[in-house]
Image 1: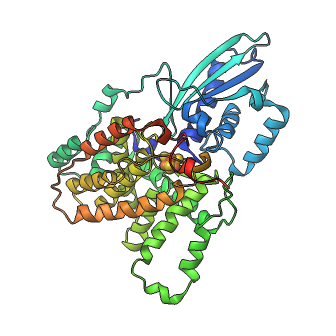
Image 2 (image 1 turned 45 degrees about the vertical axis):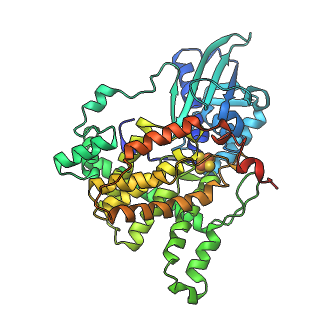
Image 3 (image 1 turned 90 degrees about the vertical axis):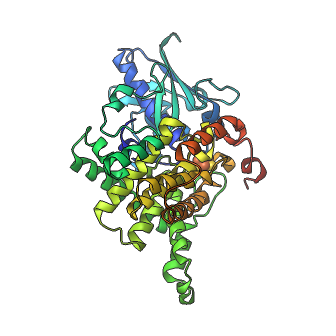
Length: 457
Ligand code: SF4
């Protein structure tokens, strides 16, 4: 990953690692099967899920994602309204149809295996795909890992980026310290350096158009979330909170309109509206994960609505800066809840939003770095313990808290001279270490924390 656009993809909820990644892996497998000229001889497919994917896969929609991916649907283009019909057909016929002329047996009850007791050493989010012929012989077998944010790698691929390629970028900063040094030397902002890097991949106009399309998708998602009154899917039968909050803010008691903290209610609303859409499995922007998808849109809405940041330039600069910070986490630590807990999801999104807000409010590179650092420092140790294996409790509310925290982090950094004790690099390293020390109970398995202390009904 070397482009900020990789961190902001338009897909579906509820989970980037458990929904988006597995859908991409399943699609990639059937395409590999065709490339190996084995698909015509394939009689049956078997998919095995390990580790966190097995533990929380049902609640996180991994089962649906695998079925859709085996039909070569993508998170970006799957028609959300038609998903129930597609799933009903597959479950009814017990067959998937990756290509019009090709239908393969896939009985979900026996061919999709949740191996709760097994974890593969490379990553907690592992899945194996096997294609069998009519005699039960294996024609092709592949293992993929969903490493966070919808990214997948297979056993053959190196998890590290193409270092030579990255080094060809004009501002190839791979750490906060390098970002500071290059900013000092060039006199450029974080967003400007990032845009120069993006220009090596495509025309600046295209980058701009794609980032504005990301913002449009974020806006539409928040708008839908403010008005959808349906109960969220899953065992919790959770009523959505965003429509009620929206009504209170727009039609509620006029006496409360003078409350100076009302702006924070709007920030919470935008975060919750997006994350409830995510929990419903609807269209959402991964930013940098689905579980934390509400934070960056909420802070960007705040900037646009209350701080006069409504022009396209400000939005593009915000997303470029947020993306640059997100890449530092992706390259040096993790953005996977299954690997480092929720600090890698909500914590990273908070850090990205804080740095981005500091930049568009006029912060220099040192203040951007400090804002991003503060955004993570106070999320260190944040566990992932979703109740019922669903991306709902604590996730939805946690996005609101993350967004408010990001705004405050930016404000603190802007009020400082940029000199501070804990660097962004130190906090990223600490987050990684804390994640490594964290019990697997708190890494998207629903085996600890709220998940075992809160009754599901
Ligand atoms: S607790 Fe955090 S990391 Fe875990 S599923 Fe929820 S948002 Fe994702």
